[in-house]
Image 1 (cartoon, rainbow, N blue to C red):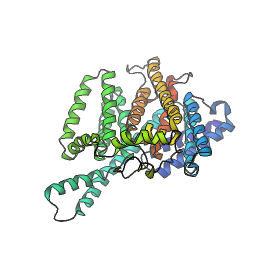
Image 2 (cartoon, rainbow, N blue to C red):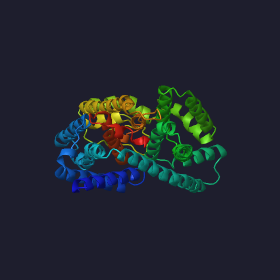
Image 3 (tube, one colour):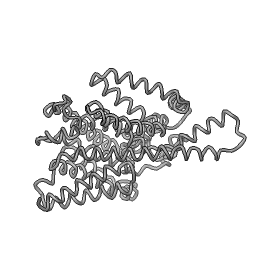
Image 4 (cartoon, helix red, strand yellow):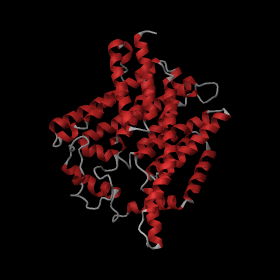
Length: 416
């Protein structure tokens, strides 16, 4: 093994640690992500022939970065955007990850397992944290509350223990595990997978994020219909019905109707009342990650969110930051990702194994990215550091659907 091969191997393990830490710690995420990029840059010097894997996704990423740069040079909030532009360096993962994978395709399976292990560890932590914090919040409620108000306060105290970030890791993990469950034949492995799914699924519910729930339901239902697994639809309906028997979950689902009340405020008002007038005044955007809460006050006075500096929708927020041109580039970029993933899905039959399932890696990636993208319709998840890094990794792995290199081993990597 020469020096370049040793460095590639080190980068594979660094990216493994990145996938493991994705659901766990933003500090570790940034450390391993930037370290992976730095090691790849070293490989560009030592092993130029294999270090650069150009994809159309990286082309769109460069155009996106160029628009951000133009906005910083000409925008009204250049200082605010410049202070956050360093995260764009993580887009180099769109080259570093495919390059590492092209040298040793088996990393795909290692990274997948590492991410699921990290998500399982986070789920175990949440199963302990959320009940304890909820109990403490209930104990702190004022004495003498009437029964109805007390029940509502108890439910709100439980909802408040969740967050936006963690359920999206659970969403991606569950979407990835769907195809794996049907591909695995070993009974012992299936029992392990069942335990992991239950562990992650319960924590997924405990965060009470309806957008993530709906995104998973769409992905799971679409997968069941697309693969003609009709029994799976029955199971999904049964699980949903059982979940609705829990009063707090039922109240959370029924609460969806209030979002469409014009007097309710919140997301619906942001999308239907504030967005178009905002874009009419700022057709070129106000700058990358530069939108402020005060920007909304001219269009609506009832924004009932803790996080008040975004539209809770990727498309609306990208447009607000980078204008209509930026939105067009971002949508073309996302369309290119789906094109790569679908192409990989169509090519998987070329490497079909003895189990008859062929490659499950493209299916896992398509399900995961679709779930994350759908949740971005009700959250600005492209702006969250941890979730943005996960976007970068999933987009980088979509390279397997574009590359014309031999991909037998990489496309069957998850079959192991």
